[in-house]
Image (tube, rainbow, N blue to C red):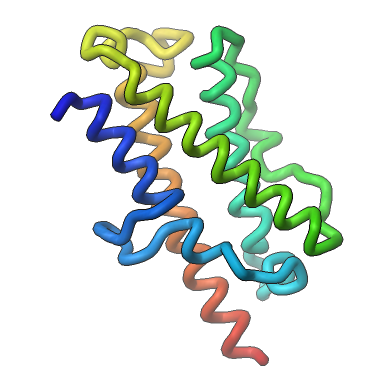
Length: 157
């Protein structure tokens, strides 16, 4: 299997449908949740909604590059989102998150080995491969946080 296909499979696993690494994924953790629970503050931790939006922010930023645009995402803005205040807003966000994650995986699948080894927008950022792999690792990191926050929030009920 081509490296690009392996990476795309891993993206889908962590966001949409996998259970191999963490025995869960974002979609399994976030579907059928209500907006009040995902916006509930637990101690000084980020909310589940903010963590999901954070991962989506980076996926969207990389998708923009794949579409021929510039890399405009900035770490300092990666946790700044308007509050979710209704179930409809939350479900709209989730729908967009799943759609954009699939778009991201599709773009990755199209990359050749040569493209994977070229610089991602700027030599300082390393290769496309490094950035895609980093996005997968970053997603698993925050998926773990979401799982723990969900457990903490249900233990306080």
